[in-house]
Length: 232
Image (tube, rainbow, N blue to C red):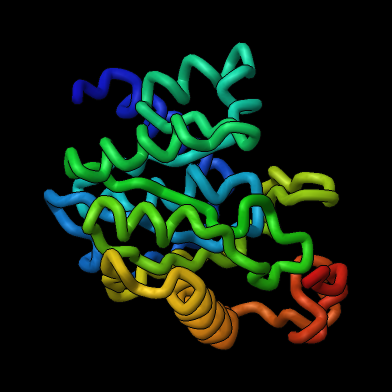
């Protein structure tokens, strides 16, 4: 499909990263297929996760088509951009159409970005996962690439005033090894496996993170931070 909107948006986004002077650490980009379809199953800690994960995937030569709630598409400014970048509109009251659209995109060889927690985690831990990512992978016959982002919550997240000052914040994005879930696999077992994989990756990223988590509002209580306790 033709991409006339994505390139100029990338230019603007990269200019924002340069202004903020974020210290990116992108790893595992070789796990993103260069041609075929795949699903990025991403943890969700901030409002910038779409843009940062999309930036991290660029060295693979791929544009990520994100599944996003319809309220974003209804926005007068964001809506035209989202449609122009061929992201997928998700109506939580009727998800069948978005599921079919994502399935078609995957079979056409697109990279689809999904936040299987469904919303930003205010505890910064990984919540229970929705089944969409695994079901799409089974239906389209494509791999799931578990993806972890960490540090973006220090810039702009739910319930905390955004910090758009230049503060040299480290932000990590790690693309894990592809996982194949086949038709006929137990859905609950597959979901539990994906969540455990994401948890293991998250803990590793947190362990290697250069800044201390202790006493920080952007860090989970498990690491000595002061974020709200997990709800589940």
